[in-house]
Image (cartoon, rainbow, N blue to C red; front, side, top):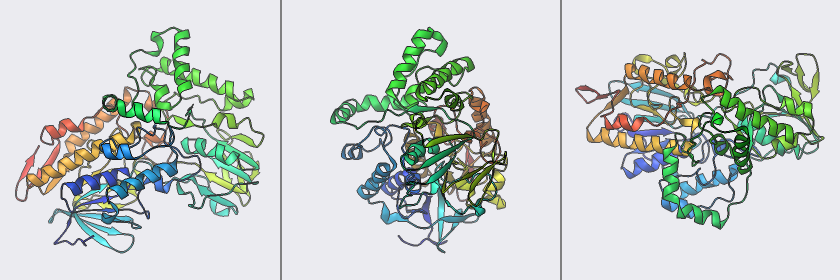
Length: 539
């Protein structure tokens, strides 16, 4: 890679070599841009490199969780299971990097620490953790929505003498829990996936639960040649169906509301989807689960009954039954989570009221004074979602405006792509876009295609600077909030609204609507200010 300087800047610097950064690099190289990727890890994969805890799987089916833009990649790669595990997804990312020869333009083991906008030269000056620097006309943060692990707000962690590990920072050589007492803090998606794996090894597993989560069985299985034959024989219909859905997931478009059918028919329809497995499949049975509270409660009741049927101890089953509205937090997909509670070596510790007050030398202490001695503690406490990765960088835009200041009351941007006051800087699947409410691979492809076309347009039109108009940004934020308020999402505290991070502004961050960005581009990048060398055209 050639060094970039103020007099010879890169066209685009991409931060992150996950699925968005890799595809964007490929697209921009084909358009003959001078582009480089900076990645903190020693290889590609993004979140699938950094996250490697046992049991980790994607909740999107494997045949959908892959690039759709390349027929060659699709036909050459073979997934082994319906819901693939982390090692296989990481292997897929490496396979793509090999096939497209991406690594030669990726600077590994370097983290972007600071990025400063220069208004005179229309460039970004970027400082890296390895002491190097770069200058670029455009910067794209492809850093992912779930990239910054969150530590629990519990004092005294430095006092604990045992081994402590976060699911988002799992050691590459793994952790052996054989014959020891383990505490698991957190029962979101990471906790539900890792717990059954720990239970197979540990002498005793104590699961500290503040709030139970809804989880749908994966019904995972090996993929057969018949699966692949059916997939390729119907691939055009498959892609069309995915693109017709707001979430980019191949599910039948529901036409009935929960209350449009009899109780017997509702049980039959939900039962079929439950038996089929997968959260997206189950939640698409009816069209109004996220819109109508009564309909939502009926579906939630169905799930709670399945939990009661699975867990042998009735009192324990009730503690595992969520009380909040289903699908207003990320609905989990599990393999044997509820069944695990029938094991003698698993204990659920309800900390909804009797909270963990502190870490001790030997384990944890509850508010009641009861202490648990633990040889190891696993933190499945999630991430600083959506905003954490960007705000971890000291980003300074026009007139000294920092990203932290711009987002001090919650993330504000235009289309999930650009922040007013930060010219020539973009985010991929950021707040204000469908992002975590969708099949993120499809969302990534759409944003990358949009960005690639945008960069090509700017070059053709000799435009030096593009920036989100503040009034257009205000209108977009208002639109995102209005759509969210039509749903049940804001009714439940979740990481979608930053409720899991003390002091984080409580704003619903994803976009709960369909795609909008293409129309903006077709209208001459309406809502963006486009600046040529000596003139300004406001779109």
